[in-house]
Image (cartoon, rainbow, N blue to C red; front, side, top):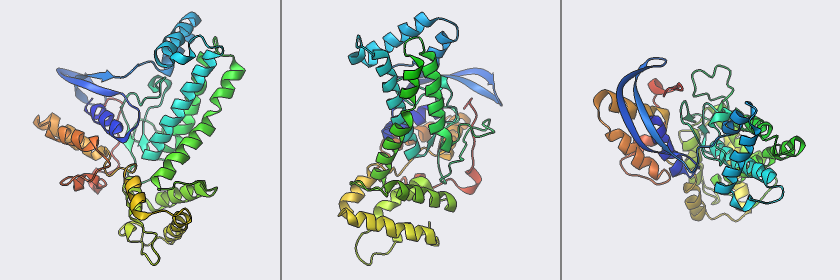
Amino acid sequence: VIREYLCGEAMHGLGIPTTRALSIVGSDERVERETTERGATLLRMAETHVRFGSFEGFHYTGREDHVKLLVDYVIEGFFPRLAGEEGGYASFLSEVVDRTAKLIALWQANGFTHGVMNTDNMSIIGLTLDYGPFGFLEDYSLEYIPNHSDHFGRYSFGNQPAIALWNLQKLAEALGSVVPRELSQEIVFGFRGLYGKYYLGIMKQKLGLITDDPGDPALIKNLLTILEEEKADYTNHMRRLADLSTEEGADDGHHAGMLEDSTAYKEWVASYRRRLISEGSVDAERKEAMNSINPKYILRNYLAERAIRKAEDEGDYSEIEGLRVLLKNPFSEQPGFEEYSKPAPPSERGLVISCSS
């Protein structure tokens, strides 16, 4: 529950739609999971806790009248302009697809891996819901898996967009009594285009690009390929890109100590600089904009684990509070917290989490 509390605050600070925690109440009761752990209750806050699975529960038990009632409830509360509209149920599904595409694009652009993306963990209004074995990328890797029980990588970082689409298909099936199958499938398969549009837009912002160029998708893909091959820290590298200068004769010191030996990266930097120059990018303005979307601090798993151990073993909650304050403003340089932006030390890398976390 401490992990959920911290991650809700971290995601909120990053501007990613999320539930948040109002309170945590500990218990002396021991709970048998992978190990014996102390029980606790977390009070989760959200505009609604309705999930994709809420509709499936009614659909697969033959209560189609309840499916319609639940759709009407969600429309009335969160999409009131659709109430009574002809084709309103189809429009409702379109809204869910759109919000889901935006959410997953934000996850991917920020290096967040949920860990257990089943339909019961998908919010109907596009919130990040149910924090368990999650993790933020350190080294960029599409194969990153924070959940120790996900042996086949179903919920790996790189697989999240495909799983979101699969979950939307399951939702469409559950809505079959109110949205015709052919129409619902057409709506759901619009996810790919929406996700691609939103992801490209966010990544262009992260690179400080303000105009459109047909070569931008390749520019982004090539960077991520290099980061994965070089096992570069994703968050820190994206942050450092803001220091690149477009001035003639400028060196590439922004990546000192990271990728200075990579020929492929040097070639990428040259193409990126040309792209910036082509749109008349102003270094100071671009740096300010990039630093407002590329965080300095994320909730790295080792930081969360240290805070949890200090709280559970020593009864000291100061580290939890320190992280809360830090992650409230993840884009700001915060004196005294420089160590918190560093990757996990070797002894604390590769931490994987269980659903009981």
